[in-house]
Image 1 (spheres, rainbow, N blue to C red):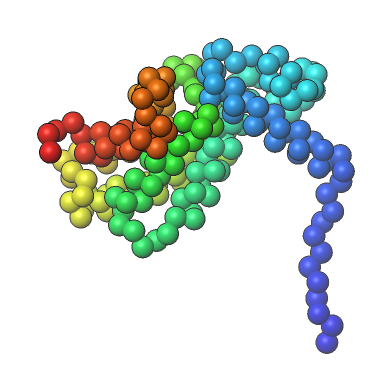
Image 2: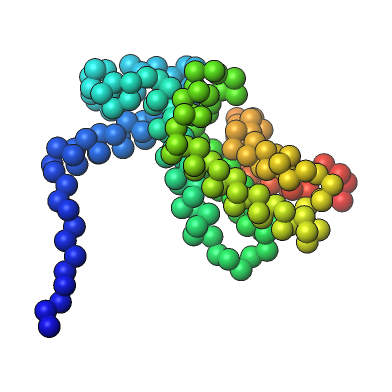
Amino acid sequence: MGMKTSVTPKVSFKTQMLQAREEAIIHMVNRLLAEKGFEAMTVDEVAAGVGIAKASLYKHFPSKEDLACAAMVYLMRRAQVFLAELPQEPPPLEKLQMVVRWTMELKLAGEMPSLPSQNSSLRATLIASKDYMNGLIEVSDVLGGWIEAAQAEGTISPGIPAIVVLYTLFARACDPVLEFLKMGGQHDDKQIVDLVMATCFQGLNAR
């Protein structure tokens, strides 16, 4: 009996080039959003950074909001992969700590997009994006499950609503304390992450 071979559909050169260009655009947007934020980033900068005409950029992403949305979809996919690859053995609190450490390391490495909390056009674009919303819901569900399990074990206070814990952990991805400490120059990145991890998970009480 002859062995069956699965045939992978051949992707055309043009499609490959378009995909590569889209990836380059998303990486550039990600870097600019991390460096200066959504308001200060311009479409001209993105096009110049990738080395393409602005008109070509608009063929991929029709607006600045679409660019930011693509960067957030990319981030959510990275988060989903990170969560899926975490070992199952550690207790829920430890897994939550691993996730928060990872997000802060991304931020300090200049790879965490910075978005305004109030921007109606951007918010509308994100909410309309199935890829972004599905990613956000999946990540939130996984973290929410770990938070509730940690509360049941007594390693996170059961008196704090799980949603408050979730938002507190999400906030570490845009925590200005990280930048303040980095600008101060007295601590390296690992020390900064350790310090913010301590305040996040153990609070400011004397111990």
